Amino acid sequence: MSETFTSSNLKNSLRLLEGSRFYLFLVLYFVVLLLPAFWLDIMETTDARYAEIGREMLRNRDYITPFYNGIKHFHKPPFTYWMTAFGLDIFGVNGLGARFFLAVFSVMSLIYTRAMTFTLTGDRDKADLSVLILSSSLLFLIVSRVISTDIYLTFFTVAALAHMFEQIYGSKSIRNAILCGIFFGFGFLTKGPIIFLFTLLPFVFMCFVSREHRRAFGIWDWLAMLLVFVCVALPWYLAVINANEGLLHYFLYDQTVERVADAERFSRSQPFYFFPAVILGTFLPWLFYFFANIRNARFVKGGAWIYMYVLIPFIVFQLSASKLATYILPFYPIMAVLASGRAERPLIPNMIGYIFLVVGIAVGATPIFVEYLRDYWMFISGSAAAYCTLTMYFIEKHWFQQRYHFTVSVSLILVTLLVYGGLCFSGPYIKGYRLSGDDIKKFDPQGKYDIVIYSAFTPSLSFYTDRVVPISFGKRRETQFQTEEEFKDIYFRNNQELVRYLDQREEYIIFTYKKNYDRYIGLTGDKCELISDRGDKKVAYFCRKGTRPGNEIRSGELYRYIP
Image (cartoon, rainbow, N blue to C red; front, top):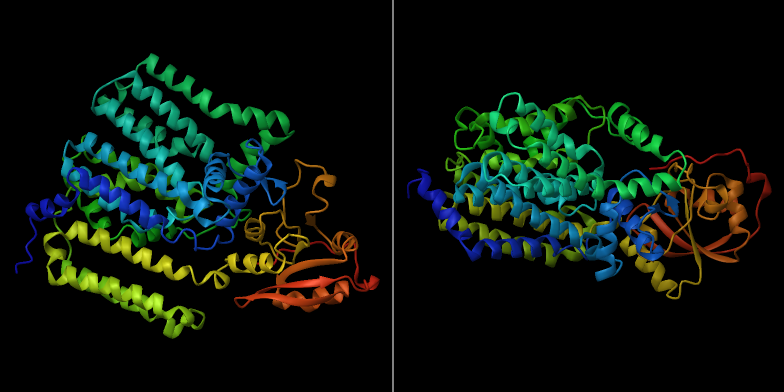
């Protein structure tokens, strides 16, 4: 069969998304995102931070002040915490509850991407294709499962842009201005002013080169947008700033200026090629089409100037000292729009099919090389075999030629499902402590014994045991918004504070690195028995009070972070 690819092949791909099939695709995509959610561990550190703050909001019934392992935490606005808490309220304190609304907002991002593409191109085929492209972009697939701000910010960005473009190139209405204000407001409640980097900053630039942009919003539109934004975004900020002295400076300087200028403080310094490498690795094969359309961008209203909605945020992030891969996800929907223009010209379709087949075989073979996966070899190898069989069927039926876009998208989605399914068995080896928490609850089902984390920072243990677990000698915490009395029983900075706490308990549970256990026993003199040994680094012991060797207690010995 000929491998010549024409626009008819694009029709073949997209015919599978016509009408109600598009919504069936969204439902299946939603299910695929949630399939491993319950069993996939809450990972340290990002997953654990947002999941635990959401859990504490739910337990405290305080949706204004975020607490992270018992200490006030104002690094981010509260929207992500709210969604996490609501998910936990519906499904319980588990991975499914923490990740449920990630999948919801991922699907809504796809719906708005489709609408935005149709506004910019007037072509339903390209609108459907942009959904396939975004839904199968690896960064989007990864972030849709990571408990953080990024998928929510992506939704508010694409929703605001969709209404901005409708106002610019479609039907003008004050409704668009009001909805933009709403999405700007919730974006501001998700990650602060960064929402404007992806939306208003490129818009302002485009006003210098595009008459449609200059004429889009009138004075009443801007006033309505501002009023709605203020009503949505500012009440929470005003409430917490009023209740916490020094918080305004913290928001404006520590969490805005220093995040851009001082990457070392937040451990996010990366080389100049970091973001280009991320895009290259997470937007293939669609990245080729994105670049190919620069010289022939007439298919999109605004032409090549629409690339500014990608280029301007990219330049800002390149200049920033703080770099994290997920920062750039909010401009992926625009990249999907711009990649849909010449996507009927695939690149070596059969080779891509065989690459997917090799990936499936590699995943199926992991139990041979990874010792801790050998107990699960039947499930992993069976899943990989099913995936490889489907891939072979795609190759045999020439779907990589005739239905290239649909087949490549489905293959990428299934590859990530296969990988995340394997990760469900890897928790203790990749900073996941669900099984450790289960062991502790099995040993102490009534929660009679206090738990202490020693020389580690593992707030996911608080999540899985559904209580705030005190941490000693862990990560440095910001405590300027609380008195010492409020956190003296949950945060220990030196041996004296730890021993004072332990002296009040005859029996308790300790969770620590294996390498630190002997040092702990030398400090406390307690008698301990092993109750959990998961993975290769951390263990839990049930301890009874022993003799406290006073010469080991040095009040001047401060905490140190042990990764």
